[in-house]
Image (cartoon, rainbow, N blue to C red):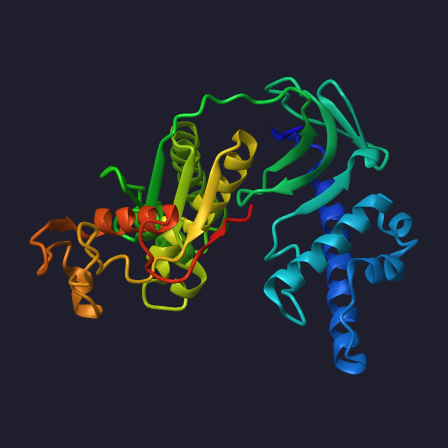
Length: 353
């Protein structure tokens, strides 16, 4: 049975202070896990798992005003993120530099109409749609403007149906063009940060914190909206999607960091992954090495390479004379490699949600 997440705005005019206190308690538990875990590694050479952290935090929920399952959710999330990033210590959480976050499980809340009861406190929210299915997990979260939302993840019994299209597509991610597809179409994602960079800089220099938060939220909302629309279009139109394995984490360490973050590759891939799972679409992470310089017509590596070749958008194959658009040619090669028609490098791997 598929999972569906509902996102509702909390009526936080009178409960914002209480939510901030709860978020502060969550930060305390996170930082405690961070400290004891790093000391365990330093002195005992032992990496604490979520079960170990559960035993160390057992019994503190009442003093902190949190539900016991919230404590368990925090320790589990901490252990998962530390394993993901392979670090001995993660970043500290604080109310000044971290957005509020209060996780919970189904047994820790009760929902009645437009009200949700957590830890003996009633929170009202704008119920913009009916909640279907059984609630599994959820969280209260704060956006960059300081507004609070409640997320409810539900298991829905009805199966989402989709008619197969028997269409496959290769995707080449880029900086100028967010995504180029093997069928020749392109997704020209807006450069939202670049568009509002000047306004954001003025607000930061003037010390207008509310204005800064408002602009940052506007950038994030615009990017999220267009990526939602594009990824929904892809999973509805294609049965198999092959994406080049370019790493946004590596790109942010270069001079193109702003452009890489503005393109939203990570969000694009994560949205595509969970929507594909919901609809039964197959998404593959394909090794894209040599995809740009390899001719999609004859497989000869005759394209412009190196740093000087990055500015060449159109080129002609010296072996067969075929004319190529640089990005479309790369997307076609990624599709071919994914389908096994040609080998650029070794193998392809399934993209994980």
